[in-house]
Length: 367
Image (tube, rainbow, N blue to C red; front, top):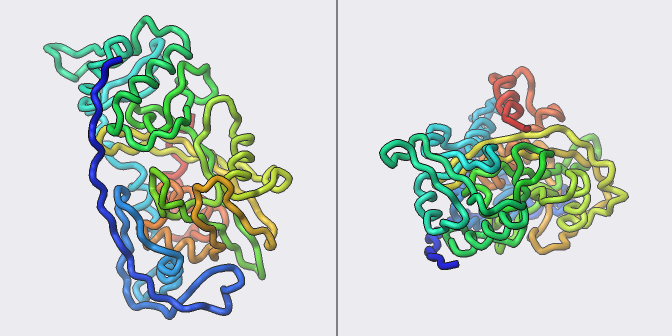
């Protein structure tokens, strides 16, 4: 297959200062702290940049006492929901992607131009007078079986090269909705470029000590192709083809945090969160199946697959501050943790906008 390769975009970096001192009170659980700062600015880290901050920065911001900071102010949480749901006004720039008369995704006009070279893979139908209005994309009629479609689409994605960064040889199943027959499978990194609905599991691992709840938080490896160096859940991962949510969670628990199945098997399903985010050619339609796992106080997670740089046990109230004040967390982790805060009583139902925020977390299409 003849193909054209494209250059990758340049990436900028951003640094956050990090003065701190050791706190004897928190030293046994691996957290650092310092004297409160008078600064009330939000520490913002753009989603497209390298993140250069460490645990000292995290604790410094989380423990700041701010005179103008009201825990009942939900604007910081709303901002994280908006961050995961950008670009609704741009939906008209995408055309439907059909397989067997079912819409499985949406493809941007501009990205469509790159697909024209693959005449044996895609059939592109344009609207009147060659306009994009009324246009759609189908897989070529010669591609009948899921295996043929997966292979042909995979070859095209390889040819597109760095136009689709972060490929990792991990396949996602493509269906009309969750649990339905699989039309084909697609490289995980490419799914947003075809508007494929993707599914994942996210687990909040928490500990109770002395009447206080703590969350285990991971810091992503700086070598991760997506969101390097940012904060993450204890366990999270995409849902690949041929595995159930619970089995995938147990596998991820072992790989990402060294949690044995005898311990992770009691993780509790607490619902699903969905969001739709448009960024350039990418149309992310994600559904996250959420879990809670209460862990023994003596347990310490150990990453087994190299995707996590380190873990820290952080008071839930401090995690709430980080969600409200910063963009240290991988964006979708922020909304899953916000849901945890609701369910565990860290966001008061008397707060202004409580029900509106709760509805915004849970009202997406989780089919």
